[in-house]
Image (cartoon, rainbow, N blue to C red; front, side, top):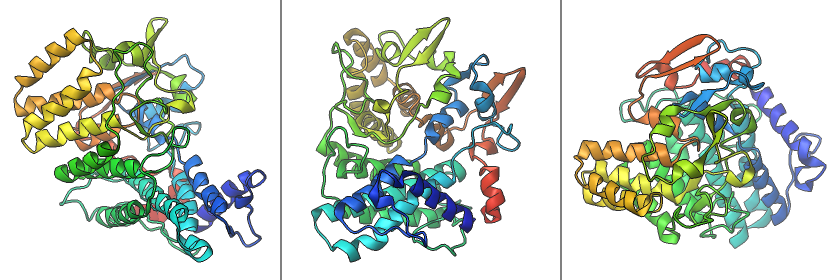
Length: 439
């Protein structure tokens, strides 16, 4: 494993070395940054190399149907059918090493920037971003390959932690609890160092204070820490709480990097291989009620089926945006029994997503819901609002883990309720290179 990780990182760096001087690899495989621009280049490489795993996660959910006539279907059908054990050799593998390539650059920054440059606002910002990117990569690895955190399973297998440049390190998975200790520590250090409240459009793939708080809100939501998730969301929204109003002619899609509500436009959530091999599922389309403007803005008819308008180019990259935070607030408040506050945030989002008449009907219905029914309404709103942004699989995994049935190429497969496949198996190549992953 150590040799594979080392080789992958060096090759990733070497591939870009010709056009980025900060990636010039020394004969012994070390990067020698010496200026602020060098270190900015290193962290930019971490961002650029971050995997597009969330696009493939959408295939595992109830959001998509596989288009068997697509030339890309052969590479995605086993993902669609949850066949992680013995997939066809042509199947696109879920990323593993790619995360550690991204982490490698953050470790380079964290371990050397103080010695080379000391401390100033620019240096602190870069170092803060490095800590947060390292935390985010480990967090996403946990979401893919480990169980959902709870007090009773903190001792279960988490993921290997990479926090230093050590070519002799054995990458044995830490526990879930230990993994989160590292993630939370990196988040705390990184957030304290940041000097930029909100990144400008065009460079808002980078972490800012607003993005760091949004990330903290999601981490706490996934850990079932409702009040902590609320507190972090409020800090992010205090910097910018705007929502895109779809009632306004010419309004941007909410996940457009230039939209008023975009926080961090990093991850590719709809890559061509998924877009060209799938259609929108009838179940997702039917979840939008009359007067919901998103159905016409998020999807487009193609022949007898529908395709997504939310991806396909870098302008729709997304990791965090305000609507997600509004829904986090609504969910956490209802789980804490504060339905009045939950309705406040749910209503604020719906006002910007429904026609005026439909919004009036929605708010009236929502006001009459029981606590259990209101939670279901919030989770439904997450399904509709965040469709095809790579979060549906995580929401299913951390909540009800429902049964889902997919049919393709003459096979019908059901992901059973609470199926073990809600925790994705490590790619076989990763296991072959590092048997410690199974420990």
